[in-house]
Length: 289
Image (cartoon, rainbow, N blue to C red):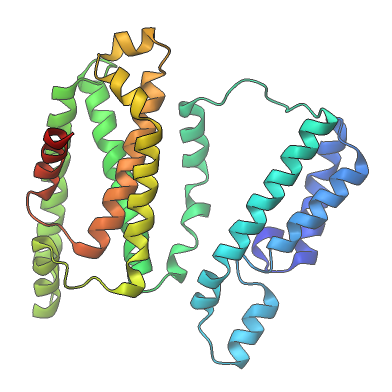
């Protein structure tokens, strides 16, 4: 596809052939559609590394993986800026979306599942701690999906605290068995020692240059939890009472599980599993609050 070619010209040609006719059919002006397509193609040379950046990395003996990571922040800034500008233009000119209904969590997860391989494509370019954090996030999301599905099935379509706790215990047992299998299959004593050290957990492996990874995860989670503190208070009254107060209980619980998975993955990928901290900290915070 043009979006994976690393060429802005190829990306513009691909999107113009696919998107512009469809946008014109839905009432968007041809000039606006062409300008939007040409502008968004400017992100292609940055994410993923464009042809020019790859040639430069080869000539200068630089890591293409580092070039890939270096393009993420400016690429995301450009993406957010384009979203903001086009949102303002759409509101000013009265452009109406094709789908006016709010996207449900089920629809979002379905679309996310269909595009999961495209989203996982950048992981091989990560190195060191970045790759560990990315894989930890994928594992955390898989564990979350398993726990949530088991709890929902066990509760007859409803999430009950007891079924959720038992589902988490069962998934933890399965994951521990997989870890034990990996230890058994390990051929070198160094690999076995590394897995045992990670299971015990330690802050010794933390470095200042990778400290921003858990910091971003924890800070984002704290902001989200603080922002939704009122909804959490309503959830403590029970699902039925919270729903009566206007809370979308199912969607709220799903998204909070995802936020928790991101926080846990960002921390565990750096420190490993520090025994019983995951069990003690929630109760300590609960007593302090």
